[in-house]
Image 1 (cartoon, rainbow, N blue to C red):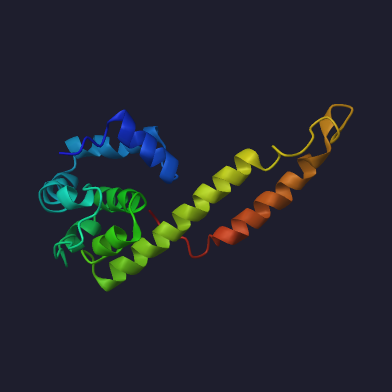
Image 2 (cartoon, helix red, strand yellow):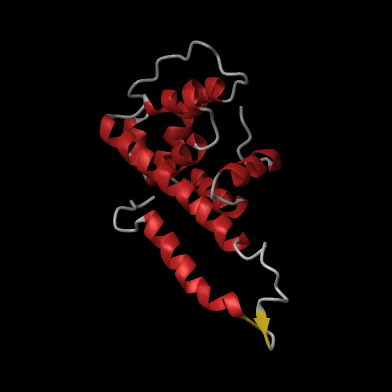
Length: 168
């Protein structure tokens, strides 16, 4: 059984997603009190995790069509599926999508796209000035590029298109 709270797993999660260890721990803390999440994890651990976490991926993935449809409607299972879908290769991601109905697949795809944009925006927000010469771009100790911050983040917000962003 996969230890979803191990340091190794959380490091991989943080590297490949926009979800940090604290957010992941909060999500997993609901496993102790949320019946829908508990039921989902029973199905996940018994029927999906063994194949999902096998490396390299088996050439023949078992049929899981419709297996997670009812669970995807609950918040914590949906969040779990979203984060784990970000960790795997395309064949396993497509395999995971087969466990959902068409509408849920569309929602998961939109969430994955939004998460990638969030991750990219976070990276840009943290590093966009790192290549600038900080001493040359200051006047009396005030960074000249500070006024650009508004424009940069305005553009990043436009890229993520908050009007179509879905609750996740």
